[in-house]
Length: 232
Image 1: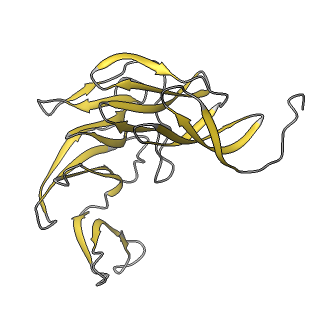
Image 2: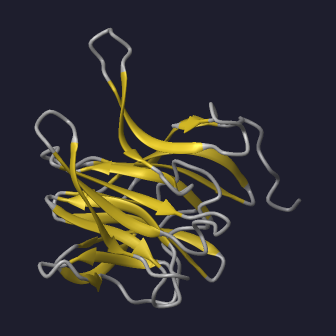
């Protein structure tokens, strides 16, 4: 939430709780005292913790940001606020919960790779490969990976082409899906199906449903029915 009551040159940013009881009341949970901005909120499955990304202008989140975790009281208030990852010059993105474990994308290795917070409350790398599992956080709501049970499903950029894969959090090989798309974004999933927006130089953007087990995909909705001649 952005508050400009003190003037457009002195905005105050906060994470707020909006009551759904019809009262339309808004309660601030985390308030920035120094101009810090927030995005990518992720509530833990049991509702006891809230993870989010914070950064301090003029730095942008794709240049330097932090992974923060707030402990939440039963009445919804914040007890404590912890910084779990992110140092100056490190970009953090898209926190997700794997049960009560917290994972995120970070570029500490030189690429935006998956990391998680281990039992010692320290960052530990999940995947170490020369590709990016996200893109610069130009806007809110980006989703390049999700957790489903004990696995994560992710899109990643390798040699200029976006690919889709899944892997167990505990380790093992990445299972890459054979797909005709070169761009993949907006990844969502449940136990059986992966949803995303895919596109390629010869295929306009399409909302896709991918059956996880056989790896077969179908179009839910296309951005256009026009076909691009492959020889164009």
